[in-house]
Image 1 (cartoon, rainbow, N blue to C red):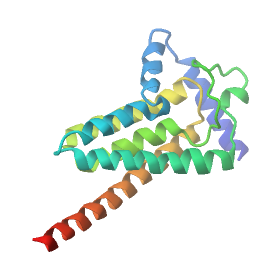
Image 2 (cartoon, rainbow, N blue to C red):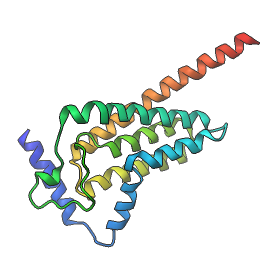
Image 3 (cartoon, rainbow, N blue to C red):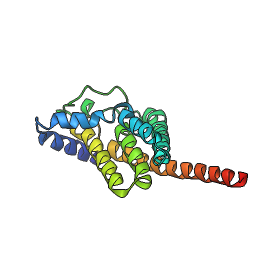
Image 4 (cartoon, one colour):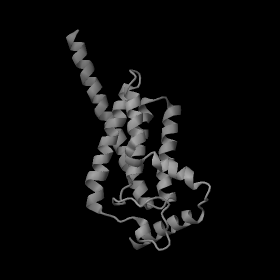
Length: 185
């Protein structure tokens, strides 16, 4: 376990060593998209407004709920991992220190939950763009010094799972709805 911590420490300090002052506002803006999941919630509500993307909107919203329940309600309090800047000497966070626990990354979870939900429901060019944005949000957490790499990896894993599970549940809902509609005809 000590080897993993040492590796994560080295990765974060290396990222800190390659930070460029002129890029920092960009990474802060990217991470802002994940604050409280506001961007992903907005996106899901936007999708819900149109009949051709309503199913995707519901899937994204449900994926965000699943991911938040797993990450913020269950895992973070159970693991209670403190943030890396509190432990790693010399690591300087570039944003106001978050008040919750570190493991897993909620930003990464929400971003990949939404992106995974979009992957199946939107044309691939949009799905790829969503995955790229999710990757940027996840990396921003490392760049800004507020998560360990394993926090981000776990957040991504939970997010992908939440997006996948949401797709399956929403698909079942639409199949059941179609069966009810067909039986009424």
